[in-house]
Length: 316
Image (tube, rainbow, N blue to C red):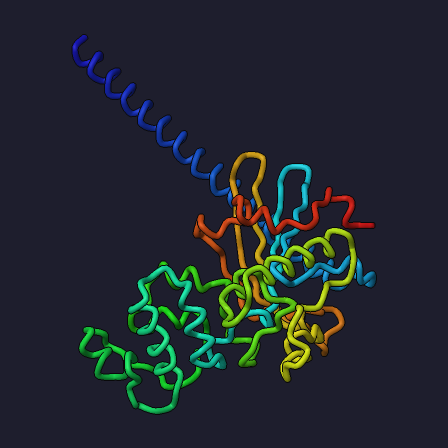
């Protein structure tokens, strides 16, 4: 009798353990399924943005100036942000003054800001001469790093993480402000986001706020975007306000939240393709976004929302 009781107890324990294991596996599979569903919906947001960029009606073409668009589907909400690379600061072309103005807003102390500017310039220049607060081979060795500056242009914005003094916080802050794709020393003011405009030297904060407000209102009311109010005597007025090619290379960020609370977010850099009619855009970069700080559903990002659609509206 005692032996039978022991065997029954052992079988009960084994059955309970098996049931617990099955519940855990079922829960894991459910999470994976929900995440895959959210990812698929976020990817559909990229396709929708590409479709809206090709709209034959100019008033319906989505703006690549940092504006956010929202689509409400039957079981999810999608937000997509479009940013022209021409409206970002090119870390390979920007001069010291622009980089200093940019870094003045970075989340580090003023001393470190200056060091980062010089270290970036030393990384991309072709020589081994050390700037006042810069860093070349010896400085990287002294810091215990087993690499040195490439002395060539940056091949990606992620390469910034290798620059001496760079940290994750500053790198994340720079993410939507800098590019390697514009190949221009200046930004296109008309398609630059508010964050980029605020980082540019010599621009009045009130002028920026007024322009961004007018630009958003024009998008909401299907009107042409206003030109940036530059000094008409400036030799750079035409170049900085020229919208030609503003959507040739741009970043699309799509985030989906499904009814079951699962979510997914991804960022894609695309360029217009002039050689393949069946594939009007070519993907230059595709990556998931995992930082909660980058969400398009924050209060700050909601201020950039210019259009909301129910899913069927996109077919009209």
